[in-house]
Image 1 (cartoon, rainbow, N blue to C red):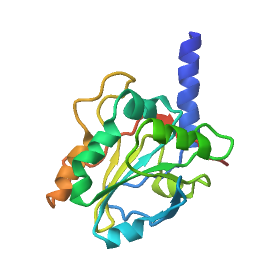
Image 2 (cartoon, rainbow, N blue to C red):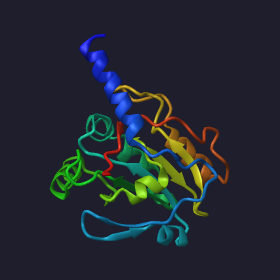
Image 3 (tube, one colour):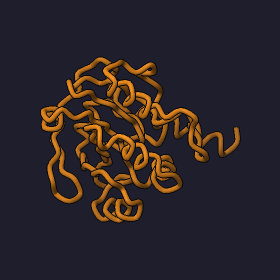
Length: 201
């Protein structure tokens, strides 16, 4: 086995051993949470739902190459959010990296938030409580939550799992189109891809 293959295998095993066992599925009730953003403002899921908002959650780690692909190399997240921002859609990035782990730190996150021109908040979940409640496995791991508080979609942002071009299908956009039309997404669940969420013990 080559060194590259060994590293790939090690990474896969690390992912399997470090992620929550149970992940939310479409149709599940979305767990409520209140988290603080980089600017100190608190955001609560229940507050957004009370206002009739559809909520998109994006698990986030600014050091992860897959996050860089969708925020730096491409503007997938900003552009997708912009398409729906006027339709009572809220987009929240959630960083569950623990202290001392890759992607943790206010200065790091604030710097890249500004550099990438992000148009929605990054919420800090360094204890990993919210990430584990949702069963977030990767960065990114996407969830679309209806105004009724139900998970409508869970999984990948698109159908291209590599580092280069974007996929031909944006699953989150398709899910939002369906939810806003009062329908269930045709594809309600996919396997998320990306870096493992850097939870603490």
